[in-house]
Length: 74
Image (cartoon, rainbow, N blue to C red; front, side, top):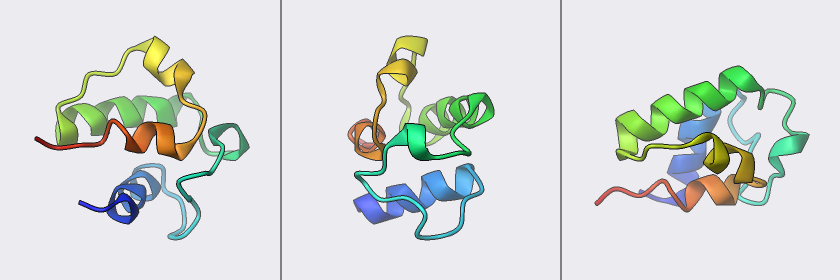
């Protein structure tokens, strides 16, 4: 899976228009990145990538790239 495909998953999960996010997009600049988006991210990561995110993980994310690094399938 490419970074672009993973970004598309995030855009779909957060109900963003295609092309809204880039790897270097700062999450604080994304208006839709709110508490519901964070919960959706936790579910997505668990369901699709078997990654359990903690609150500290979520707080540590600054850019989309930070999330992409954890979106790997074995």
